[in-house]
Structures are given as structure tokens and as C-alpha cells.
Length: 62
Image (cartoon, rainbow, N blue to C red; front, side):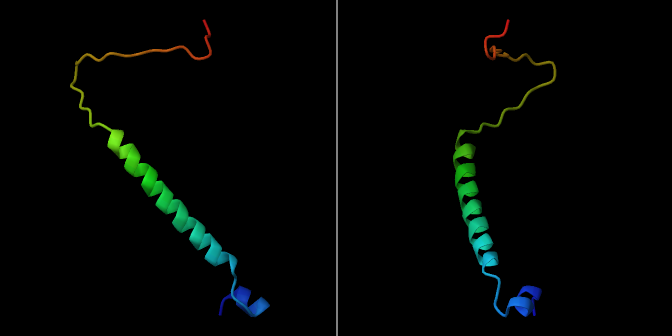
């Protein structure tokens, strides 16, 4: 018997809510990951290869 049930003579209801919340977060996370993976590209670089680096200023600090 769980300690909560022994003390209060009924099951802890919050554990079910936590499970529902975790399941919902997992579904949302998988949904977001699907859309991120659509835009992701595999890029391979070679040793001594040249790449273009774009640099932009933040908050216009000079």
C-alpha cells in the first residue's frame, strides 16, 4: 500500500494529473521536433575548407 493511501485512505489524485501533463508535454515536444527536423540540413565540412561567416551586431554596439 502506498504511504499516501495509508495516511488518507484514498489514492493521490495529483499523480494522475502529473502523468497527463507529462504525456501532453511529450506530444507537443514531438510535434515541435517534427517541424524543426523539416528545416534541418545535414552539412559536412572538409578539413581546410573555406566557409562564409555572417556576422551581425547586437544592440548596435560599436
